[in-house]
Image (cartoon, rainbow, N blue to C red):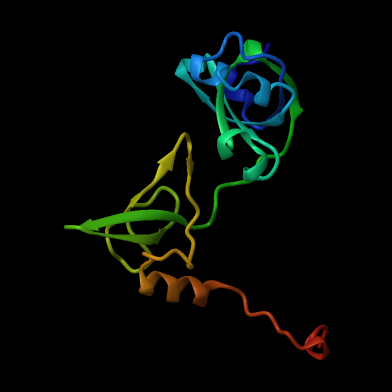
Length: 159
Protein backbone atom coordinates (compact mmCIF):
# COMPACT_ATOMS: atom_id res chain seq x y z
CA UNK A 1 0.00 0.00 0.00
CA UNK A 2 1.21 3.55 -0.64
CA UNK A 3 2.29 5.98 2.04
CA UNK A 4 -0.69 7.78 3.69
CA UNK A 5 0.49 11.25 2.61
CA UNK A 6 0.24 10.17 -1.03
CA UNK A 7 -3.44 9.19 -0.58
CA UNK A 8 -4.70 12.79 -0.53
CA UNK A 9 -7.18 13.20 -3.37
CA UNK A 10 -8.18 9.52 -3.44
CA UNK A 11 -11.88 8.66 -3.66
CA UNK A 12 -13.08 6.93 -0.47
CA UNK A 13 -16.20 5.00 0.47
CA UNK A 14 -16.97 4.58 4.16
CA UNK A 15 -17.50 0.85 4.81
CA UNK A 16 -17.44 0.89 8.65
CA UNK A 17 -16.64 3.11 11.64
CA UNK A 18 -15.39 0.35 13.97
CA UNK A 19 -11.75 1.53 14.04
CA UNK A 20 -12.51 5.26 14.11
CA UNK A 21 -13.00 7.63 17.05
CA UNK A 22 -16.03 7.12 19.30
CA UNK A 23 -17.59 10.41 18.18
CA UNK A 24 -17.39 9.24 14.58
CA UNK A 25 -18.78 5.81 15.55
CA UNK A 26 -21.83 7.54 17.01
CA UNK A 27 -22.84 8.49 13.45
CA UNK A 28 -22.24 5.00 12.02
CA UNK A 29 -25.62 4.58 10.31
CA UNK A 30 -25.45 8.03 8.71
CA UNK A 31 -21.84 7.63 7.49
CA UNK A 32 -21.58 4.06 6.18
CA UNK A 33 -22.01 3.98 2.41
CA UNK A 34 -21.20 7.65 1.90
CA UNK A 35 -18.47 8.67 -0.51
CA UNK A 36 -15.94 11.45 -0.44
CA UNK A 37 -12.34 12.41 -1.04
CA UNK A 38 -9.32 12.14 1.26
CA UNK A 39 -8.70 15.82 2.08
CA UNK A 40 -5.88 15.40 4.62
CA UNK A 41 -3.90 12.87 6.59
CA UNK A 42 -4.03 13.29 10.38
CA UNK A 43 -2.58 11.67 13.54
CA UNK A 44 0.82 10.76 12.09
CA UNK A 45 -0.77 9.03 9.11
CA UNK A 46 -3.24 6.83 11.00
CA UNK A 47 -6.38 8.84 10.21
CA UNK A 48 -7.86 10.20 7.00
CA UNK A 49 -9.92 13.39 6.93
CA UNK A 50 -12.67 12.60 4.44
CA UNK A 51 -14.55 15.40 2.70
CA UNK A 52 -17.97 13.94 1.96
CA UNK A 53 -19.79 14.43 -1.33
CA UNK A 54 -23.21 16.05 -1.32
CA UNK A 55 -24.91 19.13 0.07
CA UNK A 56 -24.29 20.16 3.68
CA UNK A 57 -28.00 19.75 4.48
CA UNK A 58 -27.78 16.06 3.46
CA UNK A 59 -24.74 15.28 5.63
CA UNK A 60 -24.79 14.06 9.25
CA UNK A 61 -25.15 17.20 11.42
CA UNK A 62 -24.26 19.22 8.31
CA UNK A 63 -20.57 18.28 8.79
CA UNK A 64 -18.66 17.90 5.55
CA UNK A 65 -15.29 16.55 6.85
CA UNK A 66 -14.99 13.47 9.08
CA UNK A 67 -11.89 11.80 10.57
CA UNK A 68 -11.85 8.05 9.84
CA UNK A 69 -9.28 5.31 10.28
CA UNK A 70 -7.93 3.82 7.05
CA UNK A 71 -9.37 0.38 7.92
CA UNK A 72 -12.88 1.89 7.82
CA UNK A 73 -12.46 3.05 4.23
CA UNK A 74 -12.45 1.54 0.78
CA UNK A 75 -10.08 3.61 -1.35
CA UNK A 76 -10.20 4.04 -5.10
CA UNK A 77 -7.83 5.58 -7.64
CA UNK A 78 -6.78 9.19 -7.06
CA UNK A 79 -8.90 11.98 -8.48
CA UNK A 80 -7.56 15.33 -9.48
CA UNK A 81 -7.18 17.73 -6.58
CA UNK A 82 -7.84 21.41 -7.08
CA UNK A 83 -4.78 23.56 -6.61
CA UNK A 84 -4.55 26.13 -3.88
CA UNK A 85 -6.70 29.23 -4.30
CA UNK A 86 -5.03 32.31 -5.79
CA UNK A 87 -5.84 34.29 -2.64
CA UNK A 88 -6.51 32.96 0.84
CA UNK A 89 -8.06 34.61 3.88
CA UNK A 90 -5.70 36.23 6.34
CA UNK A 91 -6.61 37.59 9.76
CA UNK A 92 -5.60 40.86 11.33
CA UNK A 93 -6.82 41.53 14.84
CA UNK A 94 -6.75 45.02 16.31
CA UNK A 95 -8.21 44.96 19.80
CA UNK A 96 -11.78 43.69 19.47
CA UNK A 97 -11.86 44.25 15.69
CA UNK A 98 -11.03 41.34 13.38
CA UNK A 99 -10.51 42.12 9.72
CA UNK A 100 -10.23 39.60 6.88
CA UNK A 101 -7.59 40.27 4.23
CA UNK A 102 -6.67 38.76 0.86
CA UNK A 103 -3.27 37.07 1.16
CA UNK A 104 -1.24 35.15 -1.42
CA UNK A 105 -0.62 31.57 -0.23
CA UNK A 106 2.60 31.34 1.79
CA UNK A 107 2.69 35.07 2.51
CA UNK A 108 1.94 37.03 5.69
CA UNK A 109 1.27 40.33 3.93
CA UNK A 110 -2.14 41.19 2.50
CA UNK A 111 -2.75 42.81 -0.89
CA UNK A 112 -3.33 46.09 0.95
CA UNK A 113 0.15 45.72 2.58
CA UNK A 114 -1.28 45.02 6.05
CA UNK A 115 0.26 42.20 8.08
CA UNK A 116 -2.20 39.28 8.11
CA UNK A 117 -1.90 35.65 9.19
CA UNK A 118 -3.43 33.08 6.81
CA UNK A 119 -6.00 30.69 8.31
CA UNK A 120 -4.68 27.14 7.82
CA UNK A 121 -7.30 24.42 8.32
CA UNK A 122 -6.01 20.83 8.26
CA UNK A 123 -3.54 21.47 5.46
CA UNK A 124 -5.69 23.78 3.35
CA UNK A 125 -6.41 27.48 3.52
CA UNK A 126 -9.74 29.28 3.41
CA UNK A 127 -10.16 31.07 0.05
CA UNK A 128 -10.68 34.84 0.30
CA UNK A 129 -14.27 35.98 -0.21
CA UNK A 130 -14.87 39.59 -1.21
CA UNK A 131 -18.43 39.28 0.10
CA UNK A 132 -17.42 38.38 3.68
CA UNK A 133 -18.85 40.91 6.19
CA UNK A 134 -15.46 41.75 7.73
CA UNK A 135 -13.45 41.80 4.51
CA UNK A 136 -10.96 44.65 4.19
CA UNK A 137 -12.42 47.22 1.75
CA UNK A 138 -9.00 47.90 0.20
CA UNK A 139 -8.40 44.17 -0.40
CA UNK A 140 -11.91 43.80 -1.87
CA UNK A 141 -11.24 46.69 -4.29
CA UNK A 142 -7.87 45.22 -5.29
CA UNK A 143 -9.36 41.74 -5.83
CA UNK A 144 -12.09 43.21 -8.02
CA UNK A 145 -9.46 45.11 -9.99
CA UNK A 146 -7.57 41.82 -10.57
CA UNK A 147 -10.66 40.00 -11.89
CA UNK A 148 -10.87 39.76 -15.69
CA UNK A 149 -13.43 42.02 -17.30
CA UNK A 150 -16.17 40.09 -19.07
CA UNK A 151 -18.57 41.60 -21.51
CA UNK A 152 -22.30 41.04 -21.13
CA UNK A 153 -22.92 42.01 -24.75
CA UNK A 154 -22.92 38.97 -27.11
CA UNK A 155 -21.90 41.23 -30.02
CA UNK A 156 -18.54 41.96 -28.34
CA UNK A 157 -17.50 38.29 -28.34
CA UNK A 158 -14.99 37.33 -30.99
CA UNK A 159 -14.37 40.94 -32.14
